[in-house]
Amino acid sequence: MSNIYTSFLRILALPGRSIDRGEAERIIGLILNDRGSYNVPVAARLSEDGSLVDVRAGPGKNPDFYDFWYDHPDRYACVWERFFDEGGSQDTITCYRRDGRTDGYGACWYGFDEVRVAGPADRLPDLGTLSASWEPVGDGLWRAGMAGRYQTGNDRTDIGKAGPCAMEVEWDPPVTEAAPGGLVTPTTPTYDRAETVRSEPDGLRPLLEHGDRDAGGEPRVERVELLWRGRVVRRARPEPDVFGEGREWEQRSADDWDNCLHPAYLASMEEARRHRRRS
Image (cartoon, rainbow, N blue to C red; front, side):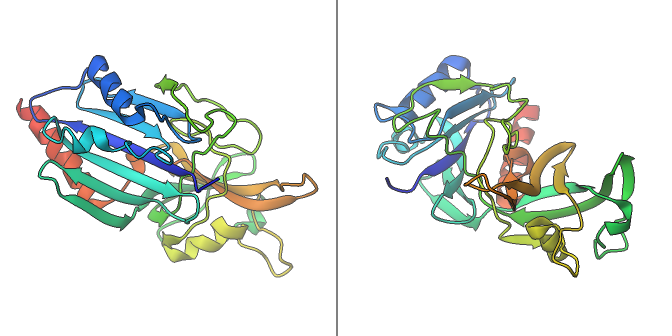
């Protein structure tokens, strides 16, 4: 079996136009064609104002996955894609433009504005900055307002649910819980390890990667969460190992378009909003 790819597509409507449910279904039909999604469940969301449609699927084994754009570039303003190859370590971001240009921007940055940990007060790690300090938010829970960003991979492989030619589309999946070891995302839960490739501030990495071990090699905290506007976008804690004989410190990512911080993407979204306000 070859590498499994996860593609997050965001298709933006032309200025002055909207994408309705029928058009969104047509787009997804062209994306999946007769090959479907390779081992990634298909999830879709249509914005209330019809300004965009989001599609998550697996393009592996589907050579016509992108033909909906290449054959009809005049129908939409542009298409943004966040892409993960399970053989790699981080998401990349690309924009497909109406003039036929494809801009590959490399690694994608994701943002957070709050850090939360679970653990005893006398073992809380130093965040390394005077502007952030721990505040109690519950029994053994602590938070710190702290803006930053990181690079990671968002793998949504689910062979049991999707299979090699998934055609079923789940619209606005109401994901509110995950099985043990999983993390809730805006589409489907993720159960795959997601390492931190880079982070800013860099001093946060030991906390994410191993709970900021003490002199004895033990994590100082029991769980770490990064949040973006109240939503958990990253979690790190001990998880059962593959043999069920112990626990290993692992990270999970629940990144989405809301905490994507790539400057060109943010500028594109702001331009689209300006056009919507004028129309």
